Image (cartoon, rainbow, N blue to C red; front, side, top):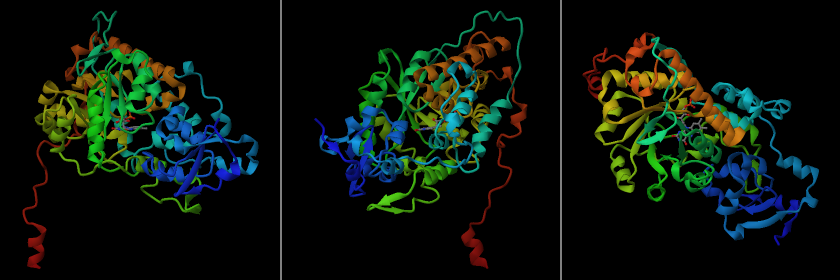
Length: 495
Ligand SMILES: Cc1cc2nc3c(=O)[nH]c(=O)nc-3n(C[C@H](O)[C@H](O)[C@H](O)COP(=O)(O)O)c2cc1C
């Protein structure tokens, strides 16, 4: 039987050299694990000597910690009879003040999220999460870089594309089924990086689920969470680790998982951007940091948020040449995620990529990066061949089934959706499946109202769209400003 451990004893193990944490009634020695924690060691030190169950359960499955830690670091059970009110209070994290785009829930509201049936579009999922999710999760999920300009441009530019509908075309039956990299899907939509509920919901909805390098489950655990996963396709999203052998090992593992059909290499985030909502909540919500048992001021400014600590492993030295190395490590089709210019789309094609995802990371990478719709239009104008020779996908601000139809008219083979699905996880697998079914229903309705019976009819056909609100915003085909001829060095030497 596991030994019972006194709460007062646990409260003494609060340094980086001796760090005990309670999770779901069990006591763990996380001293060795903390420096390896993908979410950063700081978050673990913040909870040293305390009960971290609430924050742990927000990001991980209960069995994760049990399966990751060696037996010697599983110390025993918290002796509930020794828990005092003071210990309990120290262990509870205070709510953060409102910050950024996502105001935290008031305690009253938090208890009563709306029933799933009351959520009738994708923004409803984001709104429900804003009101009922925790401040920390909201800041991380809803947040974006700096002034949120690319985040807003993504959503706005889908709305600036107008349809040119046709009539009297017998739209009694419409077909949303298509293929993505050769895999049949019920509609051309990819669910994002994330958790078991996403995998399960995506499988129910017949859409692709993309498992992330960063997550609370391993890729094998995510696959195992989907019943009868043999028939459901997954993609894997790869961030290249500065410790390259780790990436090589991860890729080799994928080759042993027949359900994984492609690797999406994320190329738009060589460093984690400044996410202020995330930083503010992190600083305010997690209480004092402990080093050697003493509270110290937490990290300030950039680097303080969850995104910054989870992204610290990403290799910022990656170049186009490294795609050859990735090619050697895996047989899977390689898709570059994060293309933001025609020049890079052409280069991806030259390098033999199976596809690209036009994306600015949902406004979470470079702020003032062009909206995904603008980039798609740029590609369509300047390098139409990429749509014919590889598969082009797009994400960022897609919130309506009609946006999927627009993406097809622009030449894309499918869309990715991030935040709404992330928020739908709060309702588990059913929430994710419901979110997807709303989208499918909206897509079918938009197709009928436009006079389209099969997505294949419109792919790459701009006669279905009026793009004039955006055409003037595209970068010019020729540089308007001549390059400067003199190098700065020569100018200075004449002074
Ligand atoms: C909470 C969250 C986590 C994300 N994690 C990753 C990730 O691990 N890798 C990645 O390439 N993109 C990641 N993204 C970006 C999404 O893949 C996608 O590009 C973006 O969310 C699309 O924009 P949307 O949220 O407006 O739909 C993440 C996005 C969110 C909101």
